[in-house]
Length: 400
Image (cartoon, rainbow, N blue to C red; front, side, top):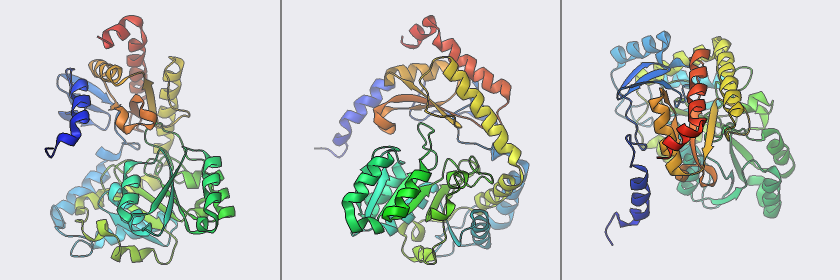
């Protein structure tokens, strides 16, 4: 058996979806015109498939901070945080995030993916038990594999199933690690965090919440779902990313536990990965300041999210279970998804095509992501593009 033969079924599935005019597995965006507009080939499109929730990728303060750091500190650190990769700016960002989250300690990682690998992989070893929501992100699943913990999945957002599984553990539930997300990336729904906290209070365990899609989106101060629901004190660890609301790249883990900093000596992704570039760190610090001082960004984001959610619901599409900046449209097959996605691009709208391998329950969907930078007129354009594809003639064309 040749090295790549194991991917035979994947190769066939990819080939089946590559029959169209565009590559659904690596869309080439030829030009970025603004936080909300770009060019794909000859098509000028509204970017409705990014996670740029607060629209800060072109924020003048963020760009200026990044340019200044680039000029003063160069293009990269060329080393890990354990070696030469901890600059003063990395530590300043950690202190600012600790203040923002009201946590004792914050560790900054090179990506949000690395943050989950680094924290969960170090904390959940072969002698430990992890209970995770079935719809958790791939980085959480991979982190559990890295640490070698015993993994128990519970049905998505099903607190009764979580409780049943914890009760079966008996006393071992008291040291189990529960893993959930603030907003889930595919369907845009939220974890039932209050109910999960109530189970934790009765049966024990530690709770980690990945707030990647909810920082800057939920909560009075934008700290995420735990703040929104008033249960921050019961969340042991918060992880997240800088690549969404904060408009750059990197990740973090925040905790009130005294021994959190020991992970700097135990986390392989922290020890053996080069640290984020000074320019990325500088832009994140400026974006964090914008998040804290400009609540109107969050207000605009939610106004846009509700407008799109209601518009697609009124058209009769199958969408996510609750309003969110992530608005998925569920389709019947991967082939329909590709045709639908291409036709949206031709109508000036770029969204994410998500094949079944990456979706809950193997569903095909296209995913819209809303930004505070979108105008109401752009949101209406997106709705009208979906409306055009709802017509029988357009749907027949999409399936051709």
